[in-house]
View 1 (spheres, rainbow, N blue to C red):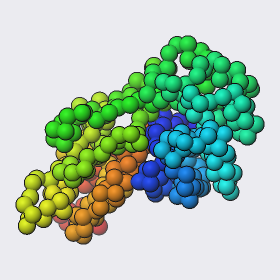
View 2: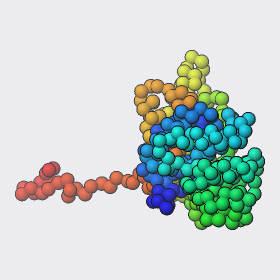
View 3: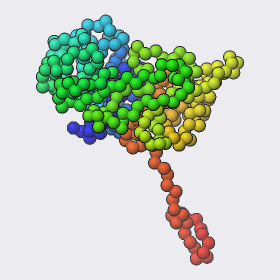
View 4: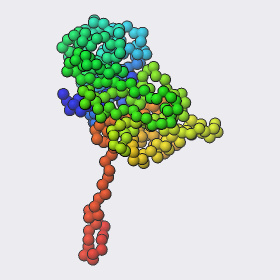
Length: 355
């Protein structure tokens, strides 16, 4: 096992939406260098250009990705399972290099023995992943059909793996993809900070290979997003006072403006000012990440980011913050004050003099 594989702890589950794919592509150099994060990518669109460019960037920077090669959501819902797997094969083989991309099989009710054997025939010589949801077939039967394939990680999507499931997958690492939904009440969603995850503290003692979630977005294809820009954007933050290791979600809001007072753009600018003020707080660390810098650049330049761009930055921020925390980059180390003796020398007159 490589150094990156041994250290990786966070497996963010992404559904291949455009904003998620672009966020991952922009951050590939940083995430690959940290070596603490391995995204799981379940495509929802048959168009492959953007996903392929992102996978190529991840490969170039040695960022390991678990690619679901038989997607079942949105564009793939009506596609026969064999045709979906063929789509994944074509995407995978279109990559010039694919050492760091791991083919991953979605275990659903339409999975057949012949499909599992075809998956092994196509990818069996490589390290593989499995995604098991609530409607997955019995894992012991799947593992028997996989034979001696190198199943390295099993992602339990929305379900906590049972003892029997852990036994069935043998030496493969288990990762629980937790469905950490935002509070259902609109008032809570837009007005309060709330705990997102503290699994970084407990996954190892619970016997998992890492922790996983859907980032801070309603990333699931069936989850609606707020139509209003009242909640201008939300960012995750590491709670540092007290130092608990918890990640919280914080909503940066703008007040209500009349139609002649700036409207949505005015609210968004007010939210950016709230973020600027939050960076001086001592109870939470927001990085600063590349996404935070982009938010502040927008504020300084007087440009209000579009809703789509803001959503992309939300994903970028969360991925980089968690990766940076696990790698020890965040929170930033305090800058020590240099002793005066390093800056001054005592001349013969006895009066201090700067060098």
